Structure formats: C-alpha cells, structure tokens
Image (cartoon, rainbow, N blue to C red; front, side, top):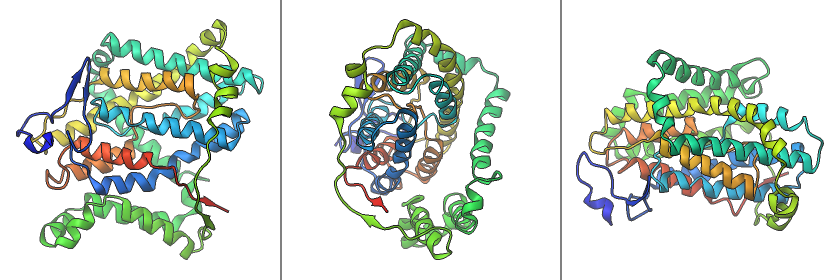
Length: 371
C-alpha cells in the first residue's frame, strides 16, 4: 500500500495521467470508514433530483433513477483524477435552468433544450480548463470579491432554511437541536479537548455528522414534526433502455444548432453561479493547509474544470440532468475538511475522506421507499 510510505510535506502517491493524478482506494489512500458511513446515509439527497425530472420532462421514475445512478457514478471522477473535493449539484442555478427549459414545449423539444444546455455548459468549462484560463481568472479576482462570494454563499445556504416559508418553519425543534449539536461536535474546542481525554468520544467524533443525521431522523417524528416513515426495502429497478430511447441523443437525436445558440446565455449565467464553488473549494482547502502541513494538497482549478466539464458533457449524452454536475458540495466538504484538520490519525489524506464519502454515496443500489 503506497499510502503507508507517504513522506511528510509531500503529496500522496498517484499515477500521472496528463493533467490528472489518478488515485485509487487502499493503494493511494486509506479507506476512511466514518466518511463512507456519512456518504452511505447522504445518498438519499441525490434522489431529490427525481421529482424535478419527472415534473419538468414527464420522465418516468424508472428512467429518472437511472440518470441519478449515472450521475452518482461520475461523482467518483473528482477524487480519482486528483480533485480533492466532494462534488455536487449546481443548486442555485437549478431554478434558472428549469425556467429556461420550461420555455420549450413538453416532449422532445424540452429534452433537446436540456441536452443543449448541459453540453454547452460542459464544453465551456472544458475550454476554460484546457486553456488554463480558469486558474488565471481565480488569481485575478480581488480578494475582497472572493471574500464576498464565499460569505454570500454561506449566508444564502442559511437563508434557504430560515427564510419565511423555509424548512425551519416545518422542523423548528429538530433543526434547532441538530444544528446546535452539529456546531458543538464539529467546531467546539471543548469537544476537541474531550476527544483527547476519552477514547469513546474520539471515535464518536470521527463519525462527523453521521450521529447528527440519525438524531434528526429519530427526533422529528418524536416531536411530531414528521411522520414515522413506512419503509419497504428492495432493489431499485432503473430502466436504462427507456432513458436512452426517450431522453438522450440516442433516442431523440442531437439538438439543432439553434438550440445550442439559445442555450449560451443560460449556460453563462450558470457558470457565474458555479464559479463561486471554485472559490469556496480553494478557500476551504487553503485553510486546512495551515493545519495539515504533513500533506501537500494540490487543488488545481483548471483540473477541476476539466473534470466537472467532462461530467456535464457525458451526462448531456448519456442522461441529461436537471441538477447539473457541479464542482463542490460545500456543506459536506466543510464537514470532511474539519475532520481532516484533526490530524493524520483521524484522516490519513484528504483524498481518503472525500473518496470514501463518495464510495459510500455511490452505493444506492438497495434503496428504501417510504409510503
């Protein structure tokens, strides 16, 4: 196992592949079971894309879940190819994309509009990454603007929960207790000292937000803010044939040139939104670098553009996705990095944390359905 021979202050070992640095589990990084558990539990988040595709495109559930599974597999590309982040959706741009696609008639026209948009967005990212313009833009942006984007992204995430009609009104007790406990477990110096003195709390702290999620799942029904789910376990049955025949270029054909030209303004707007994720990725990892001098982490905005750009292009061909393929899932990146800051014993490498999380997140073959 090459990761056991890692030298202080250097990158973890990898296989060079052009602009990419290929890392494989167990060989190049230690498998982190706590992060795998978190990913396994959080896999339900991706299923939220299904109703969006069903409503927007009239897509059957079986076809929609096939797209979710393909997207979940492509998440692995980031850490495997050398991008030390947990990727996610381009969430703030989802309403923008839905509004754009809804201007087209239901049926093949909407599918073509989605394909053209996602392929255009992906090609834009690839061009910026290949020409190395992405990293130059990051460096040229003044620090004050970067700080504003990063702070604004955090505030926007809070507003979604606490705004009038937001989730806090639905689950006030659950959110209050869960968020309070989360801040204590992740950021509290008192809990950090407790982990040093007690082995039980040290192991408990390694679980990240896993205990908090379990608490929320149990607490919400106990305080009558949610119903106990009626869970039926079974194997999901994605219909890849239906997806390919009715919702991809293999069935409906390539969009006309006019579709691609029409998609450019919306693709540019979506890119402006996701560029904030690039700034956040760098800021979060730079902060960790100050604490974890034992590992040199190479975050390259150009490489990131090539990977998430490639994901968008692949999805536009094999399964166009309403939520798109973004460069960062900020909330989970923060959780993983905070555990990474606890030292090499807690997490051997940032790639171990992000990779193990994504391997767990990918395992959604057996899925519960609540009635």
